[in-house]
Image (cartoon, rainbow, N blue to C red; front, side, top):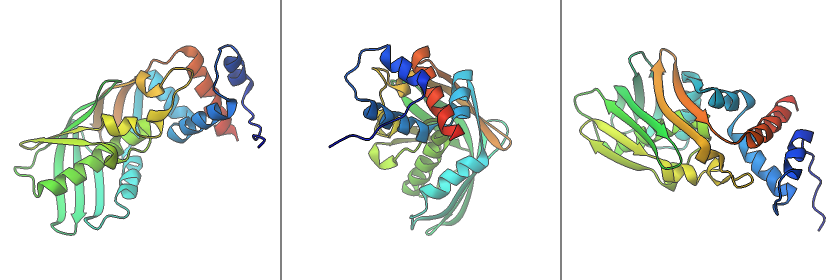
Length: 230
């Protein structure tokens, strides 16, 4: 069966020709397709520049999709506040409306670990299984702009220490679409680091770095530029 032709930008094809590879161009195009579904040109540039600001509206859009088919949680939103705090509002079938102020104490990712730590400033957390469900969705929605969709069913570990919740999403992240992408021996997710996340009024700012080799970054940027202009 004849394979369909794939047209890539000249800068991308030049890069392909500069390396020896057995991967067909179609397979590379599929991998770049996942990259384009994960990042737009601005986000990829921001990751390299070291700061990605994600508005609450973007996070809440992701949360709305995360609870779309849930019978347990009818509404779930965050509001970024100053002093590293998030206001979490949930409407649940069992407990009604819950409002919590949380401290975002840690958000880190590198090739070896991916961890988010939140501390609820309420005196007591209601219904721990429900809190696990809520905080796993909040944590993954915070990460979506940086790494794309993550399925919590693919490996999210939760630990409670009093009112402190630690979410380890490393396994689920590497089982996600972007986690499976490798370009000429380089897995973009391995070269992305996130050092921290800081809530500010109306948005969360992430401190990041993308340490891919220049040739790989150029390939991705050209592919994203083509997608933006199409």
